[in-house]
Image (cartoon, rainbow over all chains, first blue to last red; front, side, top):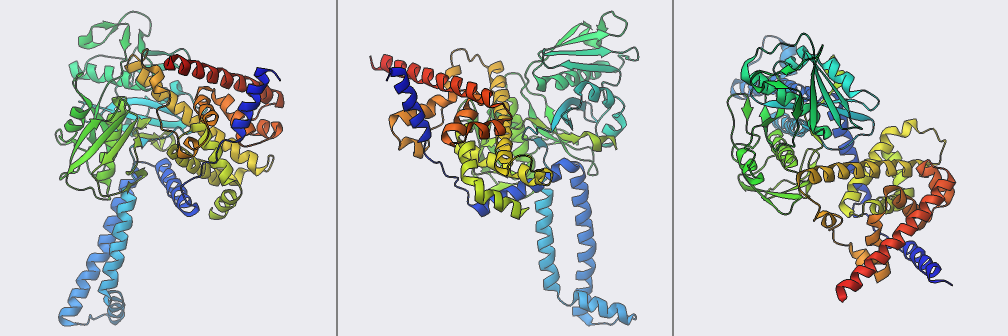
Length: 391
Length: 179
């Protein structure tokens, strides 16, 4: 037998005898994870910005139920007065007769509420083969920083067409507490295969918003193309001629570089959803400094994603992994902790980290994240369902 | 939901986990990915029309889940490549994960094969894992991959050749280091 045949046989034999690697998860554990993630996916896909509204409504309803009950119970303990309405009084006795039970139920409800509210995710963690993402950057109401949005459309949809239709959805975007849509008179198009992007400034485009409007415009275009890995965007004017972009002067192309960001939370009012917002960094800011910078709020609309009593510190374990230690304070099972974890993951992602390991925390899990393991950085932030957005 | 999960788990879980593990070669990642597979199975079981066997259907889902994972990894790697000059360090990125205990306990050839599998394309790896590690027939493999039997045979042949080449290369490198 030739050497080659011998080698082939040896290889086949080795492959057929590769050892069995056992899954360490038990059947029940795995089922629990599957069903919990399945529920999270459904919630996230349905209406991402509706969750805080629903959660707030739940709390109001809960308070509306508990406060009168407690009030009635106290009244009963004090003077056992009867109301004039016997039926109502019997009913109230029945309801308030077991205050402990009510409080216990309220505790369970509150716990459920916490679990529910802690599931408002601002990140896209996995590729979904049935959908694709259309990226765009919209300023906050203060028009300082950019909120990068990831619009979820079906896989067969067109990115260019979605960008076009977003020009007609500026009022919907504003209803989410975001600023003016900066690309109303600019048509973006992309050819992913060739790595090319174009921004066509239409005849209705007027440059009259001052230097901050110029910056917002440029950043918004860059945010739209950066996630696709486009390095350069051609700027064209309808009818020809150079494009005048305020203090940038005449431009025929725009460079799109990978840009480190410090993610914080943006919320226009308590009635509006929160978004992760990419705040400015110095180009030389290191990742550990960027994580430190996350502690600082900026004005009324942009707040630190780190809970008030918590201090965190980051250090690179290697080129791909960041360790984030909870130095002070403890994490709670709430939306604040989820926001912190997600803002850290998003920030680390812009520094080309792949994984983040949280250490020094008591809780093992928050939302979809298992904090005992290194977590993957997201593939995108601020997902919005296109169909829901159009409604 | 639970009954569908239990049925698939009881019948195929060992094979499913083995397939996903040898595709991604990372135990924790494989644990996460099998969760993805079951989520998709549960969500789309009502649309399963029985045209293929349940096993074929399950493994084609598992294959798509692993392909998504590789795409994501590729994108991350690309981002890294864009940021750093990896021309001198690219090789170090290949596979720094420690070998699982089960592999360490095996002989040198198995350890060598395991390491070299990293160099196969996703298609070659899928065929090699299904055909040899999972002991599936050419037709079963073709059904899972949605290919013709002849494409399976060609990919298998190329995959085995690539694996041999890689093993030879590694042996030569080791010899060179020893000298």
